[in-house]
Image (cartoon, each protein chain N blue to C red):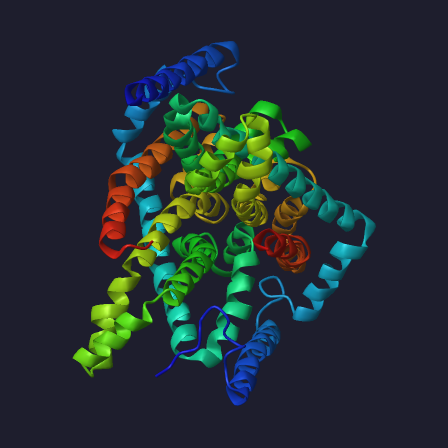
Amino acid sequence: MERADARNPAATLPPRQRLLSRLLADGLVVAAVLAWWAMSNALPANILPSPAAVAAELWLLFTDAVYLGHTAMSVVRVLLSVTLALAIGGLLAFWPLGSPWARAIVHERIQPFFNSFPSIGWAILAVIWFRVSDFTAIFVQVAILIPFCLINIGAGLKELDREALEMARSFTRTRRKILFKITLPLLLPYIVGALRIAYGVAWKIALVSELFGTGSGIGYLMGEAQQSAKPALLYACCFAIVLIFFAGEKLVLDPLSRRVRR
Amino acid sequence: MVSRERLAAHGFTLLVIAAWAYAATQVPPIAMSGPWTTAKALWAFVTDANQLKHMGWSLMHVGVAIAVSFVVGNALAFLAHYVPATALMVHGRISPFLNAFSGIGWALLALLWFGATHLTVIFSISMVLIPFALVNMKEGLATLDRELIEMGRSYTRSGLRRFLRITIPSLYPFMFATLRISFGVAWKVALTAELIGGGSGFGYLFDLARQDYRTPILFVVIVIIIAFVYCADRLVFEPVQRRLQRHYGTG
């Protein structure tokens, strides 16, 4: 009845089990694509286009000049709004550190407000306020992402090692030195955590800003594809998001997490 | 110190409402409806059975989606835990894929597959919530106290009994955390899904209000949702979670 550690499933299994687990995992992917192909033959193309048609559109999203422009626009917007949200959320989280009376303002007013504000509400209001523009899209994304950054960095500040801070205070009285030498390094794992969550939410939920707020980006393309009945493009957009999300995670976030942990 | 903090928080609330009221007088009513107009519209909303019906639909969508994603996500996590050969399939293929798939994508695809129905809305919310439940339960199962289960083995030989009496209760804090996160995220996704793929719920009201430039309705729906999520978090989730943490020591 000994069970393998769920954290690292493949490594602790005996060789035969490991082979079986690979077979199941990759078999599922192959089976899913085959099932899709079979179903696309049976269903009309405007409901389920074939994998080949979607793959062709997906290829265009990363090669065709016009499509690539939309893809790049989304990437730039996501990076920009994640950075802004991290900065604003971080500043808000740090505020009560210097002035303890502000704790309830940040954690019992601002945070729950942003946290419970519906994301589509931001999108619609921002379009009314600022019309359709790049600013609108980024405003909406930042507003959606702020609570996630604030909660994570706030949690980090709460967990901060008080004794380390106490000790630092006995060595130096310069606040700036304590901030950069002790507080920020201790906080780094939480900042990376906030970055990871914000990045995920940006691609999964905040893209709604492009559906309403702009005339460019993958979100806009999805809306277009739906309205002009181009289902292959819609599917391709969904998969493009999955690919870009993975790329960012594997190329940037995972190495960053590993570095912070060391 | 505490009273000063409270005072500052209440002062901040008043300041924001005052700023809101002032801003509303400075811009056209289409752009913003002030606190008083919103309050009147709120009263009209809660006394109108037709509007309340949409609130009920939204609640139904969110409730069913949370239940579905809770069951599916936990079932996948248990499968990976108890049948190690499936762990790579669940945590290496299914979970990352669902985790990377966009919520709007699910809503638009579901609209294509199921039309503008309740199923479309519930399906899109569930698909977004499943990875949250799955990842949370994976963490919970990883922290299971092996020694406690070992000890349970010396008391009973019935696996089912051990599972129900020891494993499941040790997982309560994680199940609860899943419900809390799901509730917050569900509302964010629900309105989008209803706007895109449904003829009912708050999201649908949003769409109507947007098209007719009936700004007060927008503000009323936003106020109701903020109040809803905030109250649920403060009055239900926080106290229960604190109790669970005291009882089980983790969370």
